Length: 303
Image: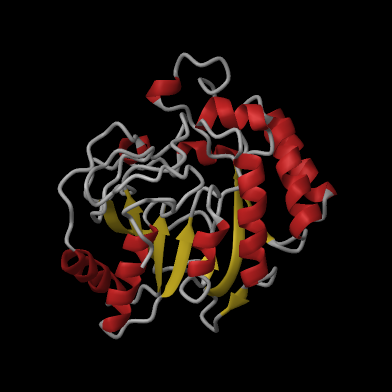
């Protein structure tokens, strides 16, 4: 079990004792800080098929991007809310799995590695064996990922930046490019570029890398795609996303206060084709009108 008494689970290396207080960058303690457990029909159809994925959304974040669409739960200055017990979490998860859902995903788990492992262990102790999906922001420590090698079936990381200044300005993590290079290289070492599929058309094992194209930052997107093609492989499954939509906090920002322009997304698509990415998905440009959760609802995606 990863130690929380001097937490260095993520690249922030806070070193705080999370068993005594929530004083690190993510402001998370050792509780199951779960915002929602829900069925999610997400952006990549192979992950859940018609049944969807049982997603566990954790509160707070080790990256805390200023523009996060999940800002209602990722804000590190917000409350952790009443902690859910492990038994309660497992009961909710297994009730969803009993509906024919075959995958269990963890969203923003980088700072919640110990809790993720505890949940997976408890679910498996109950006799369930879902496909485990690790949906992170890409700001992960290699040592932490190595603890997950025999636990996680599918890695679903973001690759947000290859521009240190944008990473500093928008996520307070100028080292993101270096960290993400190492983290995604480790995920690729573990899973390779083949997405293994079951007879039902659902993914069983592999790596899918997401990249959200941001307004005014197409050169960053091109650099991200170049890294993925050169350092990993153009054969990997890429999920290129156009769903950026300004949050209320970004309304006055010169770039992040507006939506992506059609020409910007076309440039990213052209780079994807030029670099030889043929596996994966490219969102429709109108996707910004969808995939906008409201975590004040019991089902955040019901709208």
